[in-house]
Image 1 (cartoon, rainbow, N blue to C red):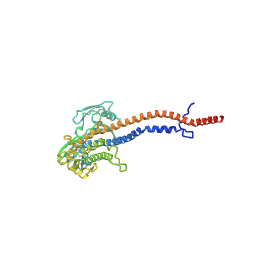
Image 2: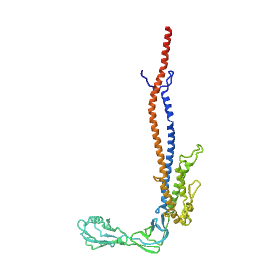
Image 3: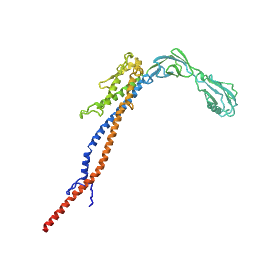
Image 4: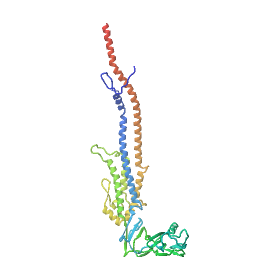
Length: 447
């Protein structure tokens, strides 16, 4: 007799059993370890997420510390202002010395140029020949005008193709077309000279290349360009016109960028400390702390940060720690900035500020902090190793859960077959009982 397995069978008057319910209860009882593993996985996920956030904050903090100790970074930035920006402007490099300079501009550098006599048009031909072109003290160049170059258009194209240091163009007006030659170099080094002309063109010098003339702090300066570099180390002057009187040029510390860099460091540090503090905060309802509260690595990172941020140097005119510059620590370990005190330091003690953050030997605040942060956040650092430990544990638990589920899936098939047979037997039992009763009744009647 074949047995029909009904996976949806339920208990009824025939004495059958709920096969799936019984099998599920058996499997659920054997899933006890799996429930524990899943709870562990949930905790590990919280720990991994917390470390990811803290690790990101540590990386950002390292960037801000590196910006402070960078010798060409914000702490060394300068700004330059002109009392008359219409005639003099300037740009400044970090290495420029702080100070005020008096500049008088006598005249700007001019650009040399020539033009020819007019012809009917740019395509009108003229007599061939040669002329000699010289730019400044460079060797003269003989220009030969043959039948392929005896129009203004063709001559301009030829001169522009030779990289001679001049720009040639054909200018048209009511009197006709003329060739204009303009030196590509300002001042005396670019002064043009045209001699030995045997062509059908006449050349007129319209402007002579002269150097710019100025004085800086009463020192006379001559420049072939209106962009003057090197006269003041780290400062590039842009001459815009003659000055009617002295122009004051002031080089100062870029307090805006310096303050921004220090405040960004403080914000990054506070983000890390706040994230760590959150792990130790106890929920008043559940009486539980964060997922990393018992993690020794987090405690070590916290201790290291507090040690680094209270780092002090010796000497430096008494500016030995962050508080000397207006950066103070609160009770929760975060930092605040006293803007007035920081402004005073930038104005009057910039060198001490730079020494504190940027000294390499002996190591100042920036080098000490950056070294420790780089070690903690490296692939061999404690944070990465702890994250790696969590990841490996998560992987092990996932493997254990998958193996258990594979075994339970096989057992489920076996249990379904077994209990389906029991169910079928129990359902046939009332019929057997009825048959026996009928047989006994028949025997009794025959007797």
